[in-house]
Amino acid sequence: MKTRIRLSIICFLGCCCVLIFGPFAAAQTDQQIYADSLVNGWQNWSWATVNLSATSPVHSGTRSASVNADAWEAIYLHHDAFDSSGYSDLVFWIHGGSTGGQLLQVQALLGGTAQTAVLVAPLPANTWQKITISLASLGVANKPNLDGVWIQDRTGTTKPAFYVDDISLTALPPPSAVNVTVDASQTIRIIDPRHFAVNATVWDAVFDTPTTISLLTEMGNQTLRFPGGSLSDDYHWQSNTSGNNQWQWATSFDKFAHVATNTAMAMFITVNYGSGTPSEAAGWVNYANVTKGCGIKFWEVGNENYGSWETDNNTRAHDPYTYANRFRDYFNQMKAVDPTIKIGAVVVTGEDTYANYTDHPATNPRTSQTHNGWTPVLLTTLKNLGVAPDFVIYHRYAQAPGAENDAGLLGSSSSWGNDAADLRQQLNDYLGTAGSGVELVCTENNSVYSNPGKQTTSLVNGLFFADSVCSAMKTEFNAVVWWDLRNGQDTANNNSSALYGWRLYGDYGIVDSATPAVPADRYPTFYLAKLLQY
Image (tube, rainbow, N blue to C red):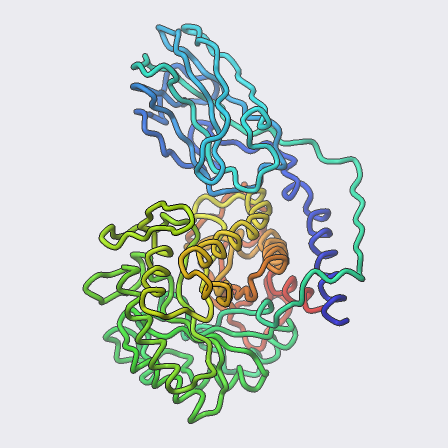
């Protein structure tokens, strides 16, 4: 009964978040795409020749986008996938240049796939005209994964230059009233303790303190992860060092375990894949679970090993085939020490994502399509090796640095279900029957993948925290580990006045490094985490 009540309250809290922050969550303001430059996280992915800083002609401001398109080329504007349900129309101004007559079509994209084409009448010369196209006409209304729009030649011939300006999405008006009903008797799913989780880091100088224990208890945290993101791929647990450094990090494994065991936390440990060995990882399992009796259940092999930002000293760095073969060795040696542990492998969504190599293609047995992306190659190789991970590790950050947008962030969590479905389909396709027993966990989640700005310390990120965790709970993800407990303040990143909030610094942490901690040392994410326990 406790889990039913808790989930009902969490669902109610999510509804309250929408009501409290309606102007953001309901997208009650238009989203600008281009106004003198690309804004709000939109990027230029055009394959036509595009100048985003043309000085003439200009519809408003001082710049427009000029487009020189050969056959079938387009100005293509991309955004990380977001929920389109708060918007009604795509609006832009277009100019035919001195010649005019261009025949164009407009398409929007869902998950990278172009939808219904809408034809534009021949452009008049030397004239700006406003084009308004409903998202319904484009086939992208009320979709969770709108991620782009393009304006394309539709005749297969070279076009004289045309110009585009003031591109935006028109927001739907807010409803006059919102009624919220919660059925407290309905069980959606059983909540896992790993949904109440946060990352701990070796650089946290005040982790092993009464302050940390008090904060974790206050917020109802039930799971910790160690040693800290990308550093894990260059961290040597015995010496508490990384790389060639002779100095030790502030928080050793023993200090981490002291806090975790004294607060009865579940634990994720990430072992060193990038510069480590299976025997080093097995030694860690032995020390933690045999020597110290910590009973750590969940062990990850590496961190985001598909990415060039990770340490990887293998001959073929960031290679899913190499990772799979080495994963087998980690898996076997670690399980030999403690057969009861669960070991996870790193994955990403999308069958063509991080196609770093092409010499070990994977054929999907369901679709007969060949893919070189990280996850298909990894899973195919593991199946051939006769190894299935106990769980797969997914990381989810909603935005790119510098492209933060409050409305976009608060609409981003609706795609958790898509991510879960994508990973489950890949597991079933490439591992076969063994895939059904593999668990999905997310061991890093926050609003921006690097260089945190003021949004991370604002109420917006707190509401995002609640919405993200609650949205994941409605899927088969059995863990969401927030990044992180303490990280450090940074004033050099995106502190735009367009973002809500008064703190002119970013911080991934949910608290700052003060000890003892007063209420002002807790960020909104801390308070939302605290609310989720009830």
